[in-house]
Structure formats: structure tokens, C-alpha cells
Length: 55
Image (cartoon, rainbow, N blue to C red):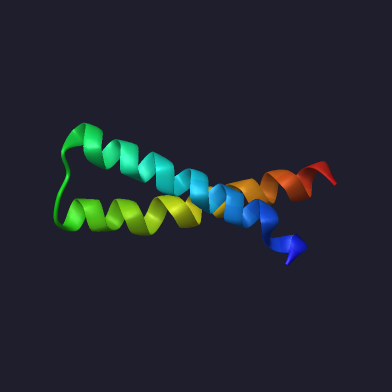
């Protein structure tokens, strides 16, 4: 489980960003769905890459 920590943290951060953008821009429907699908996965992948690059 320890190896998944950076991905989980990045996904959580991506979810927070998605929530903020959705509320700030007033998105609904398909754009909101795409935002919540893409940003957590992207945030997790970026965080995992950053941690791997530092090792």
C-alpha cells in the first residue's frame, strides 16, 4: 500500500481542483463529468512521476 501513496495524494489533489473548477465555472453535465474523470487520474499520474523522478 505504501507505493500507492503518491498516486492517492495526487488523485485527491486532482479531485479538489476539479471541485474548485466545477464550482467556479458553474459547469454541469458532460463538461463536469469529463473534468471529474480526467483531473484526478492526471493528478495521480503526475504526482507518481514526480516522486519516481526524485528517487
